[in-house]
Image 1: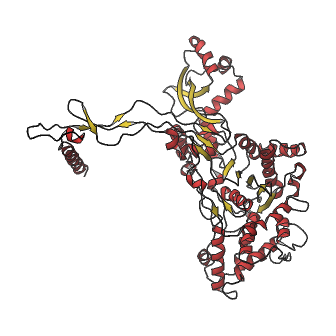
Image 2: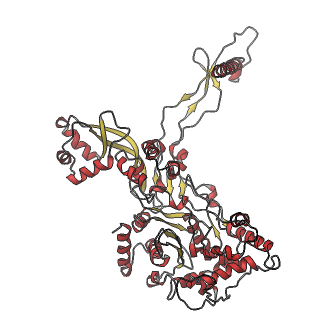
Image 3: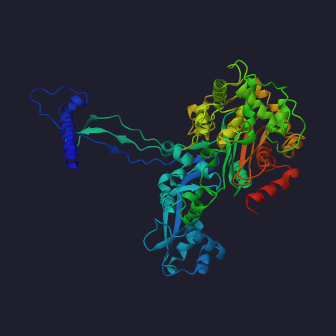
Length: 608
């Protein structure tokens, strides 16, 4: 079979060369046609690589601080045998004994090390100079210099990502780990997504030359040399680092964005880890721990993990119910515990604003029941056909929020989340005659609904904008230009802006006296926050804590979503993290009144 293929390939090549040689070089170059006595000249198509090599572009934050660049990296290689005196090695490098042991333990055997060498350690230029000066006393040591991607900050690992060529040792480790996560983890952040723009491309010439090497035109258009483009991120490096301190080793995510533009200000997937870990030559041991860790720190949670949103989803159901005239802002419902339990005692929800303020479960049970069983102008009566039609209509409006679909963020992978269809329930309940009672968990954001962290933050932005959004994105500028064109396209929901405006008083009341998150108010510093708490029931452990919100409520500049797995109540676990990120972004510092909160949250994030 291979022989036949080779014969066919050779035949096509001979045919191509025959066609190339059928014209004279003068004809090909646009000169006069060859006369009857001219000798036919055979010429060759060549591809010539220009000598200039493009430099890979840098990655900068929104304030033009360099986060990733290609720079020299100095590696010290330690031999397997004989064992080194680590105390003397520390004296040579200027490290204490604890640092020496830690650095060697973090490195472990490096898969790509030179034969006979077990560990490679990164050195600063000053440390390398000390080794060079004393090299006569350390004949067993070897060092090299390479140009590699260098991270100037430990923050933003899932955003910055990695260059695939430098992550090969990690890929091999992941395959060997046997935990089945390799393909799920292969997420290179903006390094991978914008690789073609960052790397640029070399120039190529395509001359036609004769047997004497003289050029006679070109056989293809020349390829211009293109330097690698810098990426200007939407991320605020200082806000990112602060948010990571609040999340720390807990499982969950925090996404903050500017609702006016869709620019992501902070993007945290927790547990957090240093950005250089995946590609650093002396971090093999740390990578092994991350791969085996039960909390899945290498999982890009905001983009790839979809969870039930809990009571946060009441905002969506309320907006759709207002649009379809299933309720009005003045609609009152009794807190009927026989329908569904309410986790805390509160006054009667005599309006939508109070229903949101108290997060009354029976209130929103009845809101959703009106949508499914008796929407005005829908099919008459509560019939099987009416329930199917009303659920399908509800889903169509909810999908306009960017749910049950990818938002198109500039990352290699993104999960779409999930919204159930009538057909889904027909199959799951094994009957078309399912009742609202069997799907009422939709009213509380539980059950089959799943949203990603990006979708949760975008939901807050939609309410902040009163019904529209720009797709969330991480890059605001490529070279001297702006973001990708699709991030400038405004998307509108199917819900009128007036109905989103009707949600805001209730969201503001959530952080006022008597609201579910009144302890997280920023009124003392003149910031009015609009938000919604969520406590997501979990049958396998402590409940998950959620919060979405924006500030200032009247002219929003930041929208935040926080989700803490097994965090407990959204009001006590997620809301404080969100409002501190808001305060940090809007004021630059945290008021003394909340410093004790800040320290307590950071201690909890460190696992203390």
